[in-house]
Image (tube, rainbow, N blue to C red; front, side, top):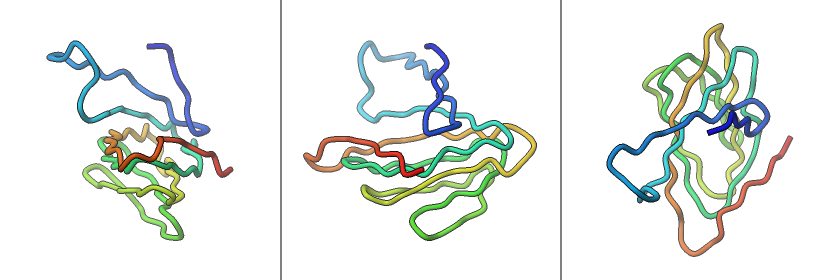
Length: 113
């Protein structure tokens, strides 16, 4: 997989499904956000995202709420709910993104900044 930068400053990392030949039943991806970088504010339709912090620390914004996050913390965002994640430390912030599709609505993403 080529290096992909999404939402301003989040680098998507490869996930290797060791026992599947096709797409997984639950989409999962990994991201890294470098020190000083931000996964920009954006909003989705058609899916719920759960972010599990596995390295580093940061500040998550979900709707109008703001949370300090660190290893072991999880953030859930619902369709239409703006969210962003900033690296607040001096090491890489890494998170796993688990996607649950919702209803028949198409999946889309819109950047807000």
